Image (cartoon, rainbow, N blue to C red; front, side, top):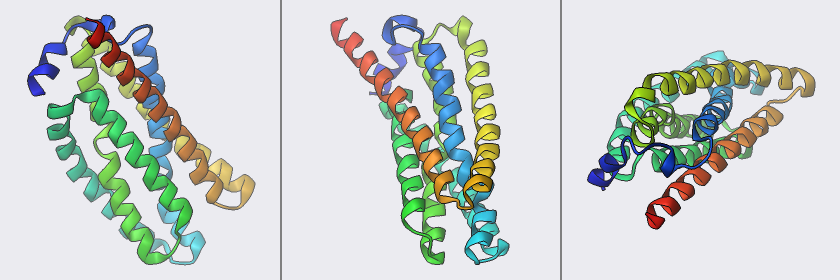
Length: 205
């Protein structure tokens, strides 16, 4: 499988169809809007639930620690299944974690969910660089990676700000988590479509 992934490198637009670069930018924005909700607001969320900011800070530390594990592990996974499949896997799991945040608000479950969220989301952003390496010409790599990573940064900023606005309007973080879940579904849809498109074109070839 690793050899097949290497053989796709540089084959370019023929594998992904129309406007794959633009779709990757939208996917990068969407995944990080979703990703920012727990990362930016977990401390305030715990305070809102009455657990205190110290518990929230512990959950954030746990989330970031497991994110390191995820980032390394996702590299091994991408070597075997490719960047798009790794992006789809991470996005689906990130959405599942956001759904768990909606379902449980006990102290112990929040620790577990925060660890899972960190474990699931850490490899998503690096997947974009792998996708660019696999499906675009080397001469385009710098610009395309820069565009997608810039979109992820805007996504983190937009998601963090937007979740705060939603909380101010509703007085609850449930709507903010739901907003993150919807953005995650958009990212999953794009990754799934691109992966299906790529496999269909490879089969025709």
